[in-house]
Image (cartoon, rainbow over all chains, first blue to last red; front, top):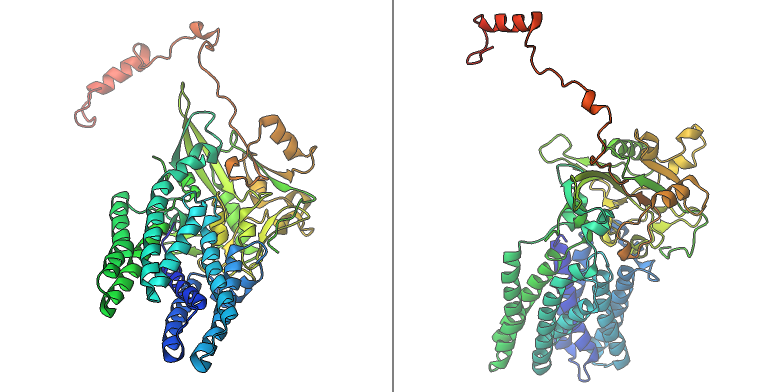
Length: 292
Length: 259
């Protein structure tokens, strides 16, 4: 799949933002006043910034409001609803904390639940697609949620929780990569089933429909060079997991924590780039891609 | 609404005969022509006369080589357009309700005024049947020529999809699969019409007829063959033979070639 920068920025930043807001909503002794203001500001800038960047890949962004209508069937529509409910309820919750030092706990819990629901619905946009076997698994959602709450814990300064969750998320990520490499083969979809010609003999793509590229080849037949894939996985896991863990284990200092956060975000962004770049869409079979 | 109908009254679709298709791409051109000039946004091209032309098409023809265990390889031309699936994954993922499957005839359509161009339906389709138009920013797909098949302004023989109407080899057939006595249902049953990627669970309406088994050359030489005189490779005797030798002796032939 084509790793569009807008989508990578969206899933990385909004995942982190909703993770932070989740912890702020759950907090039994939340910050108040200016401290609360800055925490919520960071959460909202990340979450809304991510959502805004996701509209950049739309062909018709001016109609984006229509995406709220199909929550009965569409995960994308459900995501839109969850995000709005989370942001509105936590906005009111933040209003209480910042201006009135009032802790409206129930509103915070509601917001926290919908923060998780937003990240989950985002992940389901990908995990629901049978056409991309690498994504079509429950572990895709588990990984998205794990990175989100781990990053949120890190940003909100919960050192112990962050340590545990970052290791869990990193472990999930490694396992997801390893299993994901087998999923296209396990799906049973091949050029033989795609063309129905496998009963005659071995099928080979002989001529594509045209000499140039098209929307499908640009959007869905993209695969990164395997040799870089391995290296990028290492880079992602070092930046997203190992560096933050080492920095958190060191004696606490604000500048160390800041480096941990930056390293973590960069690592998750690299992992997200791979999430798209390595994903094989079955339509590539028709174009002679994906052959071993 | 992007909920799929439980059932449709009719199941309009195509039968594509892989035995008959000659790979001429006439259906590609007629499809592009009709759908650019009629219903919905035109199918745009980008840089059409440049070094890297690209554009939106609703129908594309691949060609595959199939190598059986024994015998020569076969070349099979493979037209591919929307299969108007009964369980169309492209419809349910749509966040705006722009994509829908019609209850009356099963045609999968896009309401272009509702489409936000998010591209998720194209991701959900295993067949590559949907393409986002780069000029219009909305999703384009085969409409089964919905503006031809019910169009009473057209002569009756033209009320079928443009690709079917234009196919010079009769490789494309249009009809109602819900009716077991229809031309397409009978054809599909008789020739073993197959689904593409059945494991994806999309239940495509369009059926593909597999190529018929090829003739074998073993033991099929004509009984009269031994009496057929071999064709004379060069004139050896008579007037033509003399002429050939005489002309060969004259100077003026291209360099290095004798006779």
